[in-house]
Image: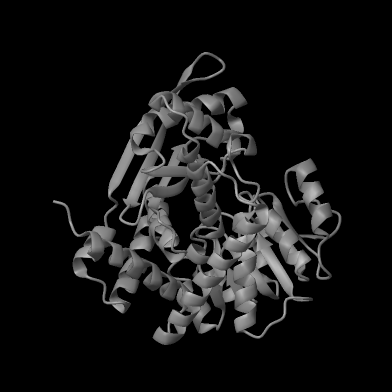
Length: 414
């Protein structure tokens, strides 16, 4: 029987707790989310009927600061997944040393079948129902799967109405006109590039001319393909929900992006050979980036991967059973809680600017993002070498020790 998302997170927590000799009381607390709110979301559809959706907002641990985590709209989202993602945010924010705890939200719906007005009503009713959890000093949502700056604007406006106060720091990933930052949308991709560069440096690999394969060509995979090409790499294969395309000489990423904008998928792109989406794991390369949904690198898939480095742009793409296979094969995996932390780091910068009421220069944001990611990578790599463990375990150890230090400093109320 396959492990649930939450079971997988707890397994990694337990493993790291044993390695770092985590205090048993803190360990028990981290194995249980602090708060889980499940809400009914009744919405009147355009045809006059009423549909009732289900939504969640989870705070896993807020010892280090307000809850931070995205909101996803997806037909398969459930409480177990949201709890797991909230815990990952606890570890992720600690790993890049942000003053946040871990939170996550979700609504079980299919945005592709909702009109724009229906999507707005779903967002606003969800925001109203979970509003007791939200606020600049308690919980700050951000975009996630199938949500964007427009959704964040609706959420911020609803919360501002409920609280009778203008609250630009209550969400991040907002439109620029509402105090968002230009760097936010591409920050996850930029952070992945920084991690890839750092991994290549440690392995004495140069980027120019090396081959990259990307699974997923959405909000993260698309910009990352361009960044990797700009760094001199050849993006030789890309897949998405519609199919996959390969060109061993290197795909024309700009032309591919135009094709996706026109057709909705990489499938049928004339600048490469059409391949089966599952074939992407068999392509020889130096860098593999899973940038779609979780659980895609299973034990059988791990046996097939022919890459020197895997940088996890997606959340939870590698199952616990697959990690030992990758380790045994000498494949370096930069784990999700490190690799995709650029997004939450940019959210932190946006939140700080909103609280200050003063925008930072774009170059300052970019430099601070790069420095945070480089520092986090260096801390994890050093800990992996000291403990003689893989980077995933080392990342969890670094993060959990920082959370534990906050628990020890604050004590237990009452």
